[in-house]
Length: 212
Image 1 (cartoon, rainbow, N blue to C red):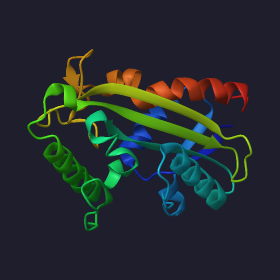
Image 2: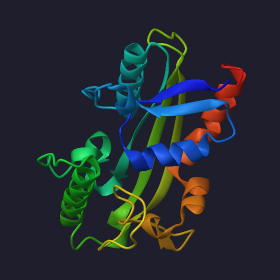
Image 3: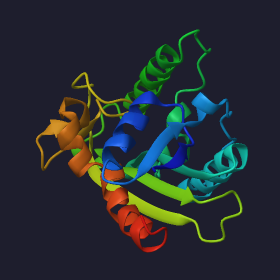
Image 4: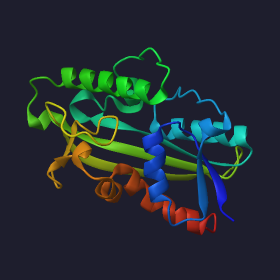
């Protein structure tokens, strides 16, 4: 019987991406929204602290295991910004009746601000990386959370390219692949992404520590 793992996120595209990465495990990944669990506050200045807060919040609410991903884009020339505020870098938008429509509007606002911050900058100043911190806990008070970090280097484009993915994917160009992340098919993204890189580490811990 598959173990239920609650995802501390309501992002449908992130859910699909992580479901694909977890396909080889006896785990049923359930978004917290399906259980009526509210999103946790993210008050900290680091990805790992926020991911841990989100994982423990979801675990406490569901009475079981939870997985959180705190991720974002970091631009060297901006001192690591947007960083932990990547999800609302352009300022919070007014919620729409449709959650995904709100997310798309928020993504557009965030991308617009990042483009503005880098307007006229040379390629050297556009170096950036996606970062994903995954934290999994067996219960809210788990003294041994599983922690994995993945980084995916690239460059911020001067204009969006591609219609896939979400977040900053249309702006992040991956030189080794010759495309923006939004131009990649799902399988290619899942082989190379920051979450995929973090998951390689998490995979080993799920087997070693959780015995999956």
